[in-house]
Image 1 (cartoon, rainbow, N blue to C red):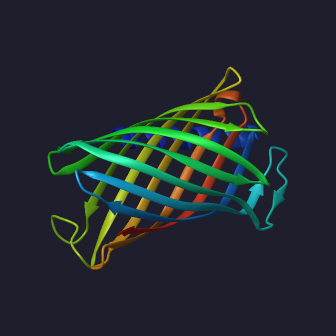
Image 2: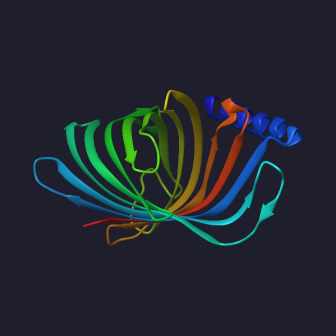
Image 3: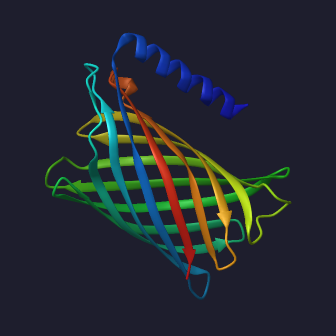
Length: 228
């Protein structure tokens, strides 16, 4: 029911902004590689590389640009510690390269998992701080709820498909200005025998609607996840 309300909310925002013409669009690719190195004493280190590649943009005046553009690249590393059977603490660093500018982001997060009847749910509470020479510091508080559902049985076994859905809310502050971003990410994944997973789907992001400058971003997400 909650997901349904979010869906209708997003449809309403898209429709209202479209008719007002106060809207911009982005369409592109979002590939990523995630390496997880499991260590002793319930520690793990997560390395991730991802990039955004624009294929089409539509600005607030309605001008469409279908030119390919390599937008940015992120390199991140997180150290995570399992503190109970259902929870984990993590912290790390992200380096972003965008338009020859470098940003530094520091990340803190807490993840809690549980079962809602037969549905596994994961709750992630996170904060991050971003610093660069080109912009003023940015601070965010994030909450994400996610689930992973096997499509061939009761658990996700080797050589089986699964469906993953996440919904995230990002509150951000920069130079005393507040913004809210909503993300909805449905993915279809395949679990290989050799500790690898491949996921493909859509990463939809809605932001700046509080300032009547709504931006819709549609990223084709392709994720390779590897356990070392």
